[in-house]
Image 1 (cartoon, one colour):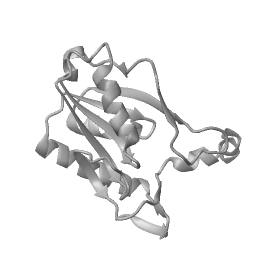
Image 2 (spheres, one colour):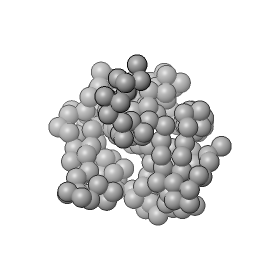
Image 3 (cartoon, rainbow, N blue to C red):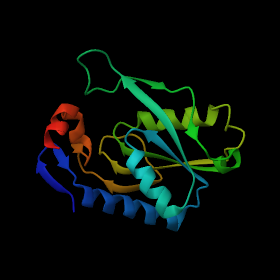
Image 4 (tube, one colour):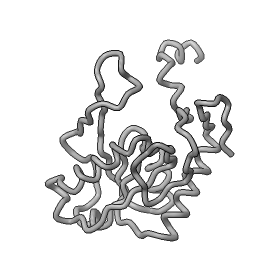
Length: 177
């Protein structure tokens, strides 16, 4: 299961990660029949890939960036949405949307994403329902996702399996090979 190596960090390996995604897939399969999976990038990218293969559903991506200013990387800032959804799904596929993020930290990103999605000109007339899913919900999050694999009793930094790539340069990788 999840190992808590440090009091304020949750370090997740890839095997644990896939089990958490599979648990989420089971919850969704038993309780909802979405017609499209919409992932909030970047955190939802691997989740969306796995869930779309398990649930056999079309996918779409929303790209969002949080900008908080120089020297404020660890703080939630103003959310900036890309102009377009990236998807090959048909308009009719957007009838029952499952909006996916890796975690509900404060809840702001999921709340704003629902609002943005319901107002997105190309799909808003097709959306009948939006439900949400994430792997982790932090204790202080004000957002209650419809589906969640792990509800945390605290607010740790979650170190996901691919996060170490943010600290490695391509030159370091080249040296390995």
